Image (tube, rainbow, N blue to C red):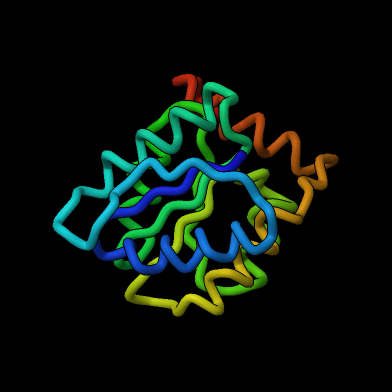
Length: 149
């Protein structure tokens, strides 16, 4: 199950992604917003990320104008590794190397076609583990207030 959310600036991109997920029989939960009326991205980010952290959803896809603000909000939720991506390589490696569990996209930056390609690679790329696991452990340590130096 995928959580999907947006603010008003990412609303139409979220709708494109929902259509893509439906066409590919990927189950999702839309946490809002539900129209292009003004809506703050932090609300959708927190709702979607809470579903990932609780285990109700495996991953989340979030959209705002640039993808940056919503990724900043998402990364404040303990246990979330969100990445704003606008290209295929970054979307693939953020899963393979960083074990990202949230993909953030910008509705004013990329179009629906590219967004769906990025969603596809993000959802279908496995974390490689190995040497990358130690790096993820350090991210978690920082999140838990530990000093690495």
